[in-house]
Amino acid sequence: MEESAKKQPATFTDFLRVRFKGLLDPAGRFLNGLGLMPNVVTIIGLIGNILGAFLLAMGQITWGGVLVMLMGPIDALDGTMARLRGQPSRFGAFVDSVTDRYSELVILLGLLVYFLRSGNDLFAALVYVAAAGSVLVSYVR
Image 1 (spheres, helix red, strand yellow):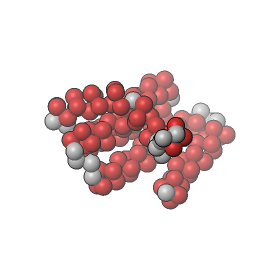
Image 2 (tube, one colour):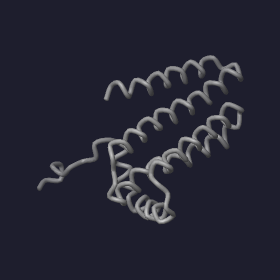
Image 3 (cartoon, rainbow, N blue to C red):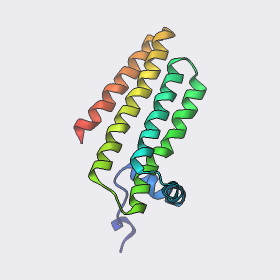
Image 4 (tube, rainbow, N blue to C red):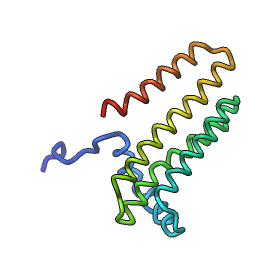
């Protein structure tokens, strides 16, 4: 079979999932071993992003950014955990998708508040446009 005929990841997220499977699977097994449910990990990620967004809004850009960046891999773990349990579900995928949108919007809200408070109207407008684009992704699918 030609190299170009092999199945390629459909999205950038799929590409990252394949690339980091060696890290995600052991972490997913560990969290499953603790008895955590995948949807709980999804909610933990959302809460972490809410806290990160609050820090961003309060001007703690470095700490807010670090917390938001730490939540990125958490988002990948819920699906990995469900797959390792042999329990991926449409409901779990729905919860993950909805919390992803909320996470994006709350982070952008934190940035919007920060830029409005600092009088940076241009960046505030750019964040608003990014938020609109984030919401539209759900409709394009």
